[in-house]
Amino acid sequence: MGRVFVAGSINMDVVAIADRHPRVGETVAGRQVLYFPGGKGANQAVAASRLGVRTTLIGRLGKDSFGAELRTFLGDQGIDLGSIRDTPEAHTGTAIITVAEADNTIVVIPGSNALIGEDDVATVPLEKGDVAVSQFEIPLPTIAAFFRRARGAGAVTMLNPAPAQTFSGELLALVDILVLNETELGFLAGTELSDGDDAERIIGVARQLRAREDQTICVTLGKRGVIALAGREEVTVPGRAVKAVDTTGAGDCFVGALAAQLAEGAPLRSALAFANAAASISVQRMGAGPSMPTAAEVAAVL
Image 1 (tube, rainbow, N blue to C red):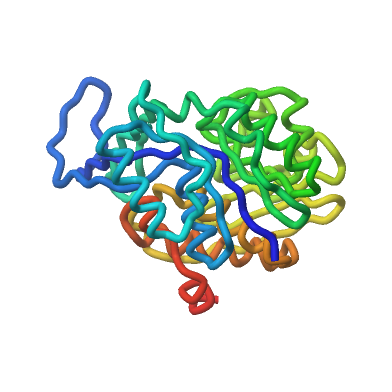
Image 2 (tube, rainbow, N blue to C red):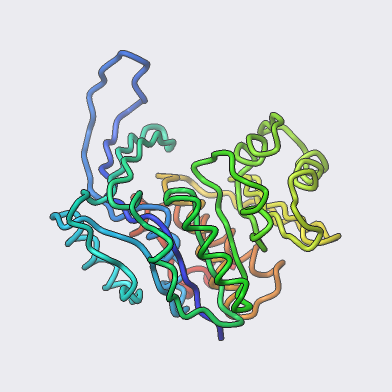
């Protein structure tokens, strides 16, 4: 069985809960403030580890109270923390999140995440059968170095290009599996996609973006499910109807679960269905990292 290696961000999520989101220039009364472990990298690592797959997180923390709390939390999830470095010159990454009406707005302050460099990924012991995962909350040259090392070792590379930003064709070519939502797909492809677009249009845009014919692009559509373009095959996984409480971290749950399934040797179609079910569980709970389900919980809904 392979392992999951995640090079990515670690944040403390400061969550304000309100009845509605404020308009620009407006102040609204909040009902509660909560603190949750988060960051896309940490969330994805927690999701994979809770599903029983050996998981290593590569990243940085500030030497502050948030950093100490996050290190403890991640260790309690069974994640290998040997590749996490303390960074005295920067504060721990922080996300300010407002949750209202089951939707969220997020402002991320990178802190120590912005200092994750190529030397942080230079000695990662990747092997064939492993899955190397990253996202866009750490420097892009670091991701490229991580993926070059992974491909050299025969590992599968998985990129979640969020928050969306333009990036080079060289980096895209290093990606075996690209996981993104329809908004991110439209941004990267230079076209506009909406909730009403059908599968044929989404697949067409994914085909335009793809760097190689053997590259897999998975497009998450929230309650509408998942569409994937894998070689010449098109895979559709229907959505799951649940009552969402907090969508923060749902995409990260999907990515971590997909990586875990692929590391265990699952075929893509069943791995996508499993990851979709895992994400549907996470949105029914508050917080990002703490909302990730176990393998038994996912099996129960499948």
